Length: 387
Image (tube, rainbow, N blue to C red):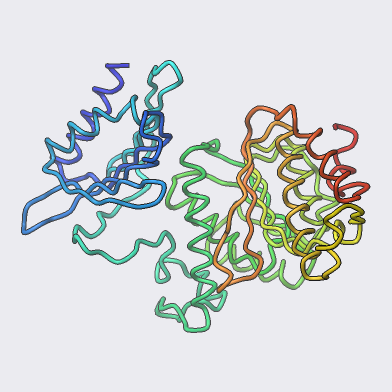
């Protein structure tokens, strides 16, 4: 372990001394202070003196502390392998990661630099965005920016949504690495706002060589997106006019389905599970199937007689059972708010990554169905040969 830590610290010291250090993240908390979730480090100039600025992210607050480099190195070395099991160093020359297992044995990983320009060293800098308008010509073709790269007033909400999506994916892939040539399928890609941004980020920021396929029923949108992909030189980005039912469930590393309506989300999840995708990301839309199937006869009936409450309960049950079915098939799941309802009312996202099966999940689903008088969840039927 000590050799790996020394090598990592040596690369950190060298990047700070050579002014190629961009940022560093400590994550996967493993220490006694479980309130401290992450630490983010970046260089700043304070009154002309170089410092390292630490953002300590706790469960309920953030704290910012600035240290001279040597004092900063001391803190980082104390945390590595003790309070945090992952460290990610970003320099202008390379990206370096150190990962510790439960026995605190460390491994080092190195890959080409994902950031090629030093960000501002100002202490009070504007909020960093992963998608920059003037550097992404597809945003203009999609009506989000002007020809000069300025975000249009009419494109502000979509631009924020795109950046939030890429922020989520970027954080996800820091902890769940994809292969260098990942095969990704976006089911229900629509006009391709998020599909283009994902390809751009993976290829031009993370240094991957992605092969992304967008599936969309409307031929006009498919033709538009394929033409735009060619204009941008995105040779491994293609769109197919196809029903997601007909897409083969094989050779998928990452499956995405954002705002696929009703059972289309279930079809997409099933395709991801059947293909053994390592990452599944869905943002469900409407929830009609379970809403019609609920026939509650217990004390909850008094509450669910109100249509709007029954609708909300159906949404909770639909997505909750989806998460449990993913867990039953060996995925670790997170369900969270994708983006504020100010930007879109369809704001729940389910992220699933390959892990260990939850052996209690099917029994939990059975109990939920009995309580709410549900005969079946559509995803169960899609997976029935496997369940």
